[in-house]
Image (cartoon, rainbow, N blue to C red; front, top):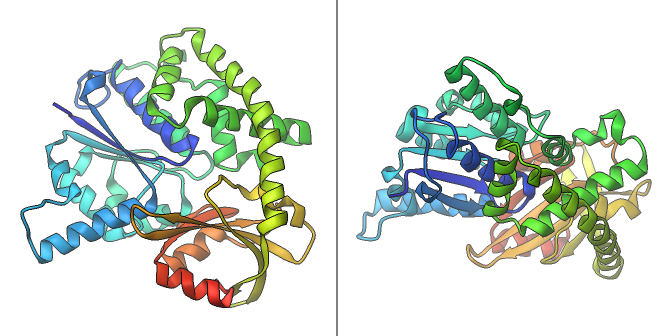
Length: 356
């Protein structure tokens, strides 16, 4: 019987690694419900924000018009505990529902400022977990479980300290590397980005890889370092090829006629429709120009939605993408990189006008 549900952001290392951290800790130490769980007692639900929005809409509609087919969220009642890591519902009502349904067995570890800020006046602020914006969700998840173990065991050992490799993944995903002196040189920054890329490709964003990698660390086995070093070597090659590919795609297919319309005026953007992975650095060719944002649109056929990612082109940009998308499109994320879910109608209007 499945006892632990782990809802995680499936699209990047931070979310999948957070899920692996949950399983690695809970299969070794009785930090939740005073129980050591078996690997087969976990159910993993990898999602993006569009998936969770669809789940919530399905539940709301079912409450209004009950049918024999129960929504996915109703079936979650069977679990002893739910972990939500590196993701949240866009709706505060949905987050409050999760807390009301599971109380202290709803564990939420996140690092996205808009939803954390929104939680301050809501009931789900009381959900156990670590929610800090200065580090990524994986370190918040690690710190939460390590602290729980320290409280129960009465001692905080070296085992509770994350590896430098985990810190590096956190530095990348939380944008901490932009302010840490160890990444001041372009060489050091490229090495970090290469490592993140290598981990993505080696893990194929599968929870099992991260479970084994983090488990090796908790077991104090050298395999943790070996897997990380292998990922870095591989990532150096892939990172270079990815940069060449995305730069070529933007130069060939990027549309620089888009604008982001804000209350303070219009801001020029380059938009691209793709299925590939992009990040803020993909638009670095526009740094110092009048193009200040990168926009990436992807079709989510499963939910009949469009995923829009928004990036700041310049590293010293003050515009907060996450806060702006939350206010205007119920999205969220970070200051320099954020996203939201659009209907096809919203996207078609944007496409016709070239205005976000």
